[in-house]
Length: 164
Image (cartoon, rainbow, N blue to C red; front, side):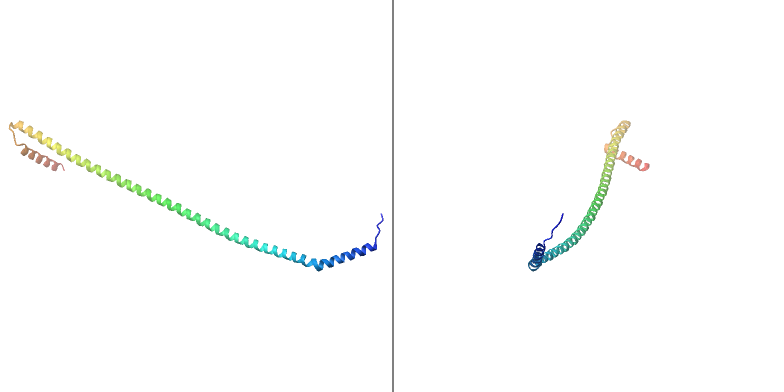
């Protein structure tokens, strides 16, 4: 296979190429270079903005981490304060319960003592009445009950003093 070279076609191809290069350099090169430079500038600006946004995001993340740490510390303080308050309330309730139980116990003791004294008075009265009745039967005379009661009370009081 044989290739034939046509010198006229080569000349016209070179002339067309040179005219095209001339036209491109004169009218097209500057806009193409300008567009590339604008694109390059836009890319550099986008990269700078991305770095700035990353730095701001990092600062925001650090601030959020500080807020979270602060909130956690505050939550721990609140929980600790709640525990201390509940412990204090429990202690106060315990003290109040003990005080109330001691008051009720003292009141019950006083009531028992009053009932005991009342029962002893009743027993004295009964004993005095029995003694007067027995003495009346023994002496076969009716004595003054008030006088005998006083004598019996005096005797019971002297007996109590001698026991103590």
